Image (cartoon, rainbow, N blue to C red):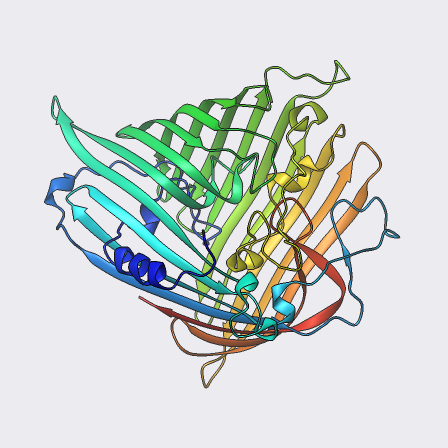
Length: 451
């Protein structure tokens, strides 16, 4: 998209006013609530979608400004470090210069059971680049079309869902492979009571995320939200996954127990059924085991996630594409984009672990986001993202990220913060990620969210 969009931007924002769809109905996106169940397949509703009121409009505007001080030591820690002595550094990036982004969108049910979610994102990636520095400005869309209807056969309600477009913060299954990333594709689901059947697809993870994979198609069946005892539910999934371009299709299964919104215990396993690898005995499997939860008690609230995951060398073989450029010639916008709102996402994603080609990879992760409300609308913020990585090739390193400080929140959605962090925006990998500064910096943010 042309970076100088004046008239097209006005037109696009006008069109976005007619966009719709509830974000919580996106079946391949993950809520920020770490204890929430996976939203890959929505529950079947017994009410007919034709009873829903059409043209239900919900506007949203999110604007944020981020700036952090220059570090005294620009060197960083990255998961690819072989040992503690390896020194890397991140180059120039938007947060050094004071970066601003705005997301303008609207949700509206076009007709009963049909909706469009449209959003226009505009970024100015640094005050000190200049007011109208065209190389540091960009505008782009995010659009998702959804169809959701319930019909009755032999007195039993069946729910059918079809979606196509942009899926934000994807989490397939329990987050073994496709998680903490965006994707474009489609999703088709059919549900009866607790039974779900789905066929979902993400287009071309070869670019943008650097996974070395073409289209990915997941065809599966599951029992979701099955009640066990009071407040406890279970999810069971089994699917066949086709990985185009990279070769080696897979069979995946998962099991999860969810207790209200307080805790979710989960496991997912996948076996790659064929692989061209130099070692015939290469492990072709991957597994993740995790515990997630969220709780709010008076003025204190937190959500967290702890995971152990392992990828065999044969499972990750060839699933990397380093020819993805997030930085241009003298610009923080390359052939592909690192969106500014990705900076606040966790480190862990599949692309991190596929960097270790021809090696088995294990990782332990702990993520905790907490805040405490003080008088006069003040808040204390504490965020940690701890990652320990080891491989059969001798790599053993930990990437421990933090963001701790104070804020002022005069109203819901409006927040000013001043924190100490070691999170470094890294434009020099082949996927959007963060590294850890060896010395912390001061991070100042201003955020306004209107709905």
